Amino acid sequence: MVKITGSCFCGQVTYHGDVEIVGAANCHCDDCRKASGAVYLTNLFVKAEGLNFEGKTMEFHHKSDRGSDMTKVNCAACGAPIYGLNSAREGMVVLRAGTLDQKELITPSVNVFCESKVPSTPLDGTLAQFDGMPG
Image (cartoon, rainbow, N blue to C red; front, side, top):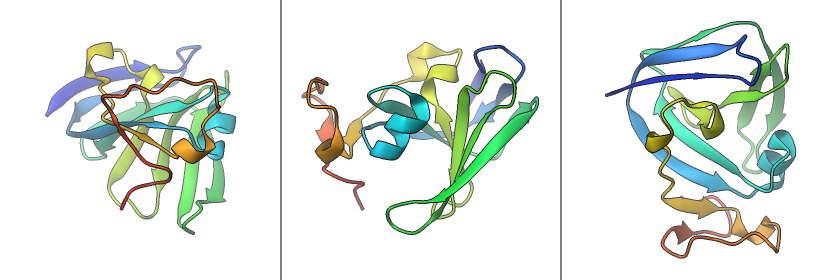
């Protein structure tokens, strides 16, 4: 377990907790790219137990390429992406790594959806790479 804190751009949505970090990934899929406005999105997978959010959020719902129900949660004031939920990953919260205060905890081990990455985006050759989502 590790203690984490974080917030959106304007600070109206915050989170804190003692959580288990399961992993981190750089996602190059079209959905993450468009939802974040960046060429890829680094996601931190944490167990939901012990994680607390405060502040007004807005949600966007859609289906993944595998048919699972996806929820993207953003700050209602500044619109910054905070986290996501995936019905195929029960009990897991996918934090947008850029919102985390403890930068040293952001240690991606994989690049996923590399087939749809922006061609000019360099990839760290020490990380595993997958054309889609593994498993």
